[in-house]
Length: 175
Image (tube, rainbow, N blue to C red):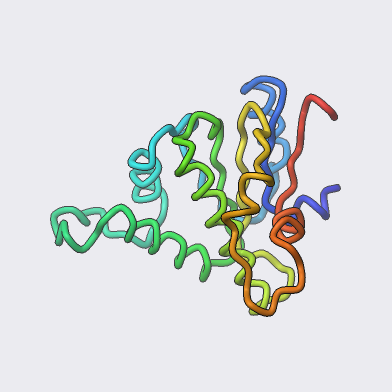
């Protein structure tokens, strides 16, 4: 299972937040990737973007003073995805993501998985980065992501097959 986990993005669900936190810490203990850990319980896209701005090194800390029209939330998100796409051996951890605004929650998860999907052609099956999310329930994540995912034109797999190939859901209630 360790080999499988190292090659996939992970969503940890079930039990309570303390148990998920302990499991996550055990999972990433000794990891030789650079770990970027968001603060737990982010609920809005604005909070998420502020965390991105604080955690990741690609956006100037004075972005608002430089040119407010230039650095929009969506641009920060785009810069973040570009940076993630071109950075290797990183682990992004978002704990207790279940209360995030629904629209943005699935958009964020989709964009991370889609970014690694588009990297497949460049580097085979190895991940440039890994995403780990914890939340209380699964909520049918694969079913929600499937219709909004978007595949390459030459893709022979379905959206669901790609997502299941990229994502491992660990339900602590069933383990």
